[in-house]
Amino acid sequence: MLSSDTRLSIADEKRLIGIIFFLFAVQMMSWIPRFPEVKANLGLSNGEFGTYISLTSIGALIAMISSGHLIQKYGSRRILFSSTFSMCVAIVTLVHLESESLFILFNMINGAAISTFHTAITAQAFQVQDRAGEMVLSRQQGYWTIGAFVTAILSGILVDLVSITLHITTLSIILFFAILYFISKLNPELIKRSTSEKDDFNVFDLFRSFRIDVLVSTALACALIVEFATGDWSAIYSKESIGVSGSLATIPYIASLLALISGRLWIHIVLRRIPLESMVKIGSIVGGIGFIGFITASSMLIEVSKAAAFACAIAGFTIGGLGSSFLSAALHTAANARSPQHSAIVIGQLGAVNAVLILLTKTVIAWTAQFTDSIAIALIIPGLMLLSVAFMSRVVKGI
Image: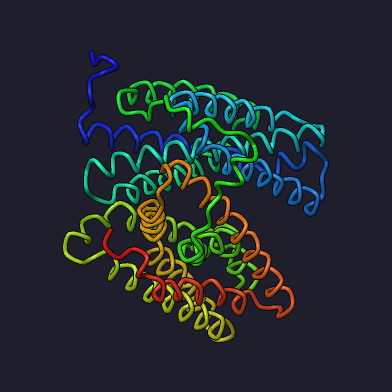
């Protein structure tokens, strides 16, 4: 049995972090496919429920600003344990609630716990990335995407078989102990608590030390928005604009997820032959043009052939997902390399800025769809944003 001082091999550390990313996604996403039941429990309208869910970002932003400093001061073990406990308890509580005020409170707690856990485990991925000398983070994000994919399918199967409370409570208890087990296995490589007095901080220090890398933050928001837009609009576009059935309308999103998984898991093989800066240009140009081109073609074919329009939509969302799949990992790595601060602090601060930018962009996309009465026109925005990453690719040069 390993002692607490025995170093793990790079392969073991990557494997354990990948498993934790996978389990994190399963826990985080487990209750989302069952939102209609949560809304019914609370007796809310669509507008009220959407507003309450969006309040997750308040807890998330607070956590993003502070979690990096907490990890640096106390080490990642304590932060991972506490955020795992908070996340599991919050999600279990949320599916039992009928009180709106308590739902808002626990939703913000859940957002804070998720953001804190994400910051801590991503900082660990950066640590093994430095040891391995290759871009490991993309694969870890691939495992997260697999977890999100698996839990979406699992929840879809269970929705008509078991109650939401039994499903989420049982799953959360199992995941709580599973995540803690793998965190314990990772213990020899976990970020240790700081013994330096300079790492003590107060509330004002959080804001005084806040740094915004404008170029990386802008590029990251532009790189991620296709993924968010696909999740928000692919099924709605397929069902309402093209006219396919509800069961078929999820196919573009599933195809996009599979493209994201493929790109994230295997980009490291491509990078052995092609420099990262070149791949960022290729991914953003191919992804952006392919996304815009096929979605535009889809909208033009609706009156001619719904089958052809749907096939083009699937192709557009898939190419957009594949082109953007590895950009997040590349840009997070660039942000870490460009900053003198601890990686956990960089991740938290970058996440806080990105959350605001993504929220604003998603709002613009939604209102563009509303005013133009065309989802296809609105989707040109994320396509152009992805394409623009090619002009910011210099941020990854030399990493």
